[in-house]
Image (tube, rainbow, N blue to C red; front, side, top):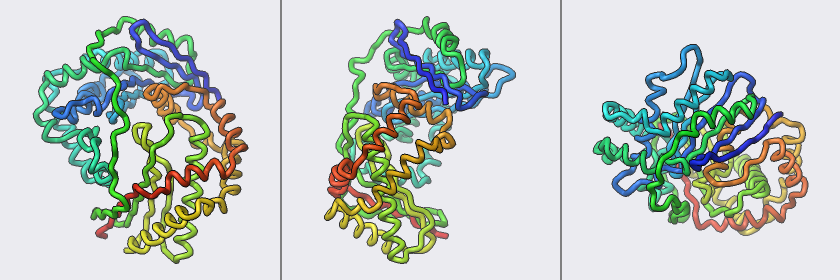
Length: 419
């Protein structure tokens, strides 16, 4: 696998990255990324960053693309970022036109007064649809008592209804500045040629920095309610439990932290599945994974899907497992060597390549820009992962177990089907 990384900064302060990879031969991904999201809004502006993103995305709605090429695009607004991604054919003309579109977004040329009301209707409909989803219900409950509830990225419908064009324009002019921007090209391209495309398109882009302070507090208190069990009735036919356990992660983002978290998630999954099976509980799906939240908090998220009305039994089993782990942090060691060997084999056999796509590398590249982490090639990352896993001992996992299972913050969310 080829993965060559080139990074640089224009005189304006805009950073850019070209990632030359052969994962896909015929497609290229481009992105414009900004360190601005809903946390940058004022109390009276929740949803403004999202509306600005939708205003910029009119290029996709009305297909402002070069003739003869197939494009696809997405926009994303989160607490700490706004991202625009375009996927296009691996041809110079298509790439250059994609970069032209991204520059128009940076300039605000798609923000037109005549489209604001239509955009607001689209965003309000998105809020209605989102409010019906399990993810939205879980999100609101988890952050019910925290500052984040006032800055939900999708926005507050009442605030969005009354947003003016002047507010939209002012937010764009304040935050869409080169110092907060990053452009990425990712695909089987020639690095020098791609660098030249970016420099040609963005060298002339500049804007005065009008922000007093661009830093945001990423770690507001979550205030989760201890051991709270919350029920949500949905129209789903299957019953679904989600369990969230919260802890503050290390400020240091490194390979070892990633390995320890992934290993712990697998160990917990195996232990819980065994306990459910021993209790004769019928379930169709179980997963355990760490979920990042603004790179400050992490949740261990467990999902259990079952067909019968067994949520009380499942919760009792899970609480018993958690209590046992809390009392004996060595309990998970039973599956440690087996998990470690499986993890090593996954990378040594290159099985990971079947799970890898351009979108994975793009997501990783964007995260490294947002969080200011050094970006290394995937090949180097795999070598580092193998080395860390090879030297991993249960002592490394045990301290994480003790931190996670302090059990002060744990929420059980039950999505109970009507069918």
